[in-house]
Image 1 (cartoon, rainbow, N blue to C red):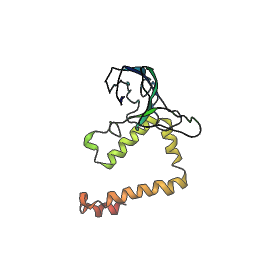
Image 2: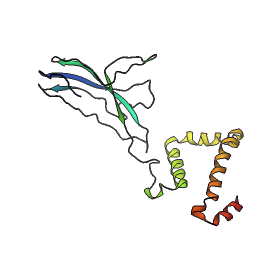
Image 3: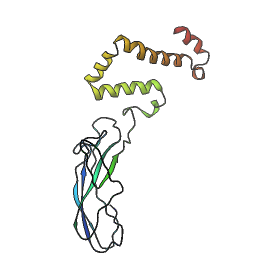
Image 4: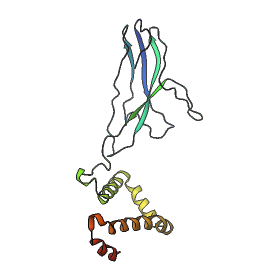
Length: 188
């Protein structure tokens, strides 16, 4: 948190974390981060003050970028006015105004999560490890989705097209297979 201006006198400011329940990709307090509510004390002339918010590793192997907000609640003591770099305004359900700053939790792990580094360049390995990850993370929902793909119109339009494209790409890869492409095309 940055203090600007003359910075005369001591100031204490209360801050807290909040999750935004009406937004997508929200971080959840207790699961993705620890709810933190603290007071920051600025000495006379001190311009910067920081505090820590403990983050939790995701349960699954990979997660998208999540976010939560830190709110400047009030000046507990001293003479100061609160401001922030981004005033968030929403319309409709959950509309609020306030002094918030968005905090992003960026995923640094690889995707799919358990894929060895030597397999990263192989499209079939990526597909294998992706399916393995989906089965692990989605469980029964994965198999329901697979069953839905047996439905003929979906299968005819979507699955057949993708499989044919992948097979033709595999068969016609002259750079890696050379004259073996003739044999592969005859198999198709």
